[in-house]
Length: 347
Ligand code: 5AD
Ligand code: FES
Image 1 (tube, rainbow, N blue to C red):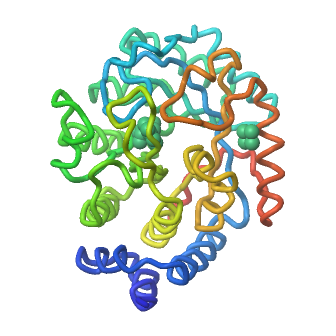
Image 2: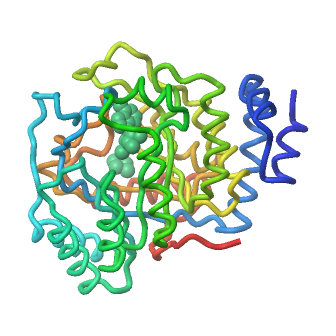
């Protein structure tokens, strides 16, 4: 039943490629629950039963990229495209601050109409208005010098999923103008610059193999990020991957637990995608070792236009509804929402 591999992981925070593959191939319910209970106690030892909240602001759905899995890829002509103005972005943060948030995540497609100067200005304004808040960027690949400017302007964290560590698999998910080496290069730059950096993957993305996942775990161990985003792949009807099936709840939960055990201090969200494939998916994510949740603070009128995959939850108008919903969900399983900045705790 391979509990001994979980025990080894707990002891060494690492496994060999061969062991990862064996473990991933032998997953069943009892083993998953074994890993989850270990992961929970690791998370609780470091972060208690607090779940950090991040206010997500989806500020543009324009994207220069054409990733085969993504609903806002540039070839999807059905998307109603929007951009928030700097003032609109700032008022989202102000609203979030009133609601108690101390981290804002600016997420968008790769939209170069927001120049380095424009973004730098937005970052400065947010940090000036809310100096006690952390600011996370999730805006894809840019030059190292741009990343440096954003950091100097006050951005604290950066999310950039690597999607898959395997070059061949990467090329099956992305058109050829995107390069796996460049994605990893960006992640190294972000870490060097000093961002709390997040990488991550979709579970069950098309053509993903067990070996790919093992390599993702090895890559994450090597990068040693402060955050890891893991959610199931979910098909979007207006993409080339519309016929593929969604990633499994069970494998997503298992990977959350393994990630917690491999990187004990990592900030690990129970993602919206996880809540989309199962109504209590985020609760199960927390019970598998996640310690972050990211309610949507985007203005109600644009929420239904930022759709990366089918049936996305939380597209209702009111951010406050999501907050009370999340509060209740966490309470039900014995956790509490924490409104502090929630920085990475070094070991
Ligand atoms: N299903 C699940 N996750 C997706 N993402 C993009 N498209 C999908 C999809 N169809 C994820 C990617 C990206 C993050 C912002 O959203 O991993 O990095
Ligand atoms: Fe958004 Fe429940 S968290 S509706």
